[in-house]
Length: 107
Image (cartoon, rainbow, N blue to C red; front, top):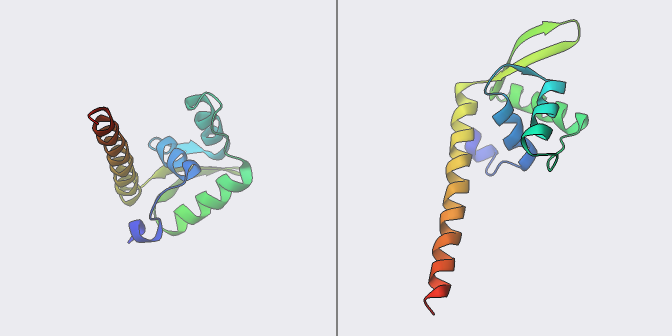
């Protein structure tokens, strides 16, 4: 069901779910994404908190703690499945590109 609603993950969606494979809070997620991508991907606070709310509503992530105003989240099994499906989709895209390039070399 989640796959139908979220056919293809956007870059911010993908990296947020990737960063939530371990417990993390909003600012920590933004820092981790920036560090992981060498600054290529910056997820702003508005985008982050909108997606966290959507993911939590769709049970793709869950809140595990709240201290003062800092909420900590982690990916759920449903979210892991969604992330795994996206990773497989991306791998297929890369494999198609490789097949295509090999075919061009044979012409």
